[in-house]
Amino acid sequence: MRRITYSGTVFLTGNRIAEAFVAYARALGRRGLADTVSLPALTSSGERHMIQVLVGPASQLVSEPWDDWDDLSREIEDAEKVEQIEHLTSRLSDSDENA
Image (cartoon, rainbow, N blue to C red; front, side):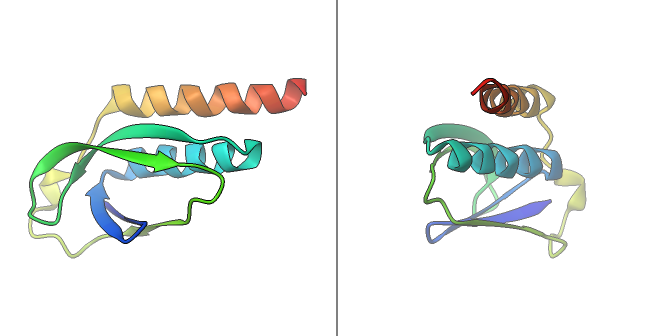
């Protein structure tokens, strides 16, 4: 699990989801763009929800390992969401190469 801190809010999400999200935020920042991303996450109350995060060039987020979890078997996985975010990141990277 990873704990994401962003704009005064903290949420937990799976390792692969967090990695894809941070890479996408970085790609958006490099292009001076913003986007809203829906992510599966555990809220502070421990409930799983889809959350929306607005990321852009001024986004300051932190992703850190989160081992302080009672039930590590609850790792959030969503291969389809990871693939979607990686595709968006790839499109931005392709745009950089063609510019």
